Image (cartoon, rainbow, N blue to C red; front, side):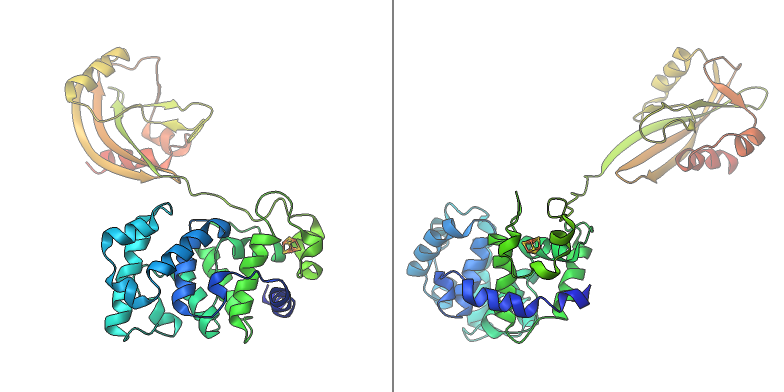
Length: 348
Ligand code: SF4
């Protein structure tokens, strides 16, 4: 991948220098200006940020002014931008810069990274744009351009993929680090667009771009949101008949562990009376009911919390399949989650 990436620096920097927009925070390389604009741009588009940026700079023209601003006045200046914690962090960081760095922005990247509210991206943007430090500034725009250019099908929402892209870019960042990073961001904003067709014929990277060559621009980048984990609780029964056979049943044909065998169970934890009533509904006559213990099983998107019960019943019935421990071991596959409960019984 780096071999291909090593071709991007020159055309990208040239393109940026010829096509960059004149934005108020680009008129100088003043870290304060770049910092404030980058934090504002994290939540709002460039066109909308202009207005807020001008108003902010008029009220708070430098780090010292920001460090001393009244909280209410700061919130008023931030009104309309949302994410007020970002504004509070700006003031906190300004106070650190004034007290610990004598009002001068710290360098290099690692020092910037220590300031409140300054993450990898913002530190990379300030260090490269203001000081031409060869560090990456990877945001969603950059991830999209790189995924398309390299034809990567990895999930760009995965932090490890982002880290990997940052490392690969670090190896190819030229001396003009600021123009390189800003070029990538601007290319993502204006040419390699997220929705709809990117404007490939106008792109300085088209010659070596995999997505352009192979018609993959609509398919890339791959963005898979991590599913939220959920929890479920089950009361699980190890039902044993007088003949020493154990009750199992087949799970439904779709869903988790589809079509596999399981120990009979019900959702949630319950009092003994409720459990006995369920057993009776199943047509069973329980003789003893003993708590086996609790086990947890972790699936990809769900955690099962199981409470196991050993129950001896007066006789087998047709609702379940009654199998010997030997058959259970050799013929029927019991998923690990239920084996955990079964083993509690073996250890009794
Ligand atoms: S050629 Fe097209 S897909 Fe490739 S980087 Fe440029 S704009 Fe994006």
